[in-house]
Image 1 (spheres, rainbow, N blue to C red):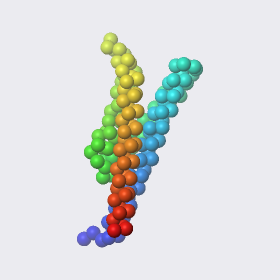
Image 2: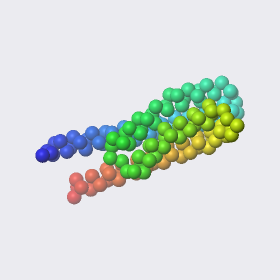
Image 3: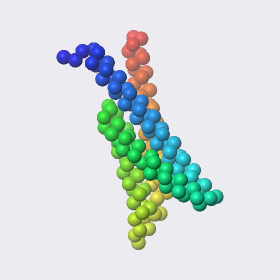
Image 4: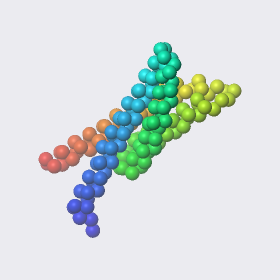
Length: 145
């Protein structure tokens, strides 16, 4: 038999995972913005910024795996899960598009995949925000009613 205290503890843990997930998704998105800005500076102004561009993805790439694990652990919608799954896939495609040298010139896809990655990351932030705020609003209504 599950007591009310155990149920409250499960809800608290779930909420912490969701809040952490939300914060990590925002950090991931901000890192993508920084990466786009550094590539712009590298291309138009100072090529030394390429190093920062490369190190950024090495620094935040692991966050996509943390988001994937969080999406699978917490009770998120299928939409959030699919967005979280696509982040490491898109990062893998980014890596392949720039490092695999073929006659197909896959490097041409690198910016397109990057913009897709930014779109998916932004969608994830907004979707989690909507779901979490909706959940919070339902709890407030239940407590007051």
